[in-house]
Length: 181
Image 1 (cartoon, rainbow, N blue to C red):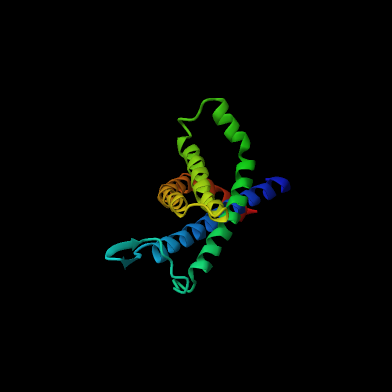
Image 2: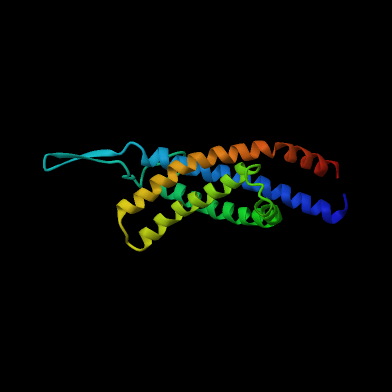
């Protein structure tokens, strides 16, 4: 391989690995927020009626060394990092997308296309609650989007795992090329 090709291969390899690492941290922090802070809830007795608040968050609770704010900032930070890396990844593969869509190869590439669509929906359902909160909107609407986001994220994780498994031969071959040079 020539020098510019070596550099392009190394950059692609690094971007893909950074996508995996930032994606893992993003998923882990999201799971910690969901399991460590959102699940369970508490009950209140108000005027003889019992109410269950399942989304109450104790801001002083510490899970794996961080409070909810710490995990939330970690999650949001890695969302930004992951999105920037993903945009670069999509840019470098833009011709592939044009070819797949232009030649009608959607059925053959359904996994990758579904992954992209799922990521877009998960991103939107994750961003909308921020805007609802900033605008002082309805807590019920915000919570509804968060619930959709949380559930679709589980499906997205499955598709991400399948995508990485499908690309394992590329990782092996690329690592061998990089190691050889």
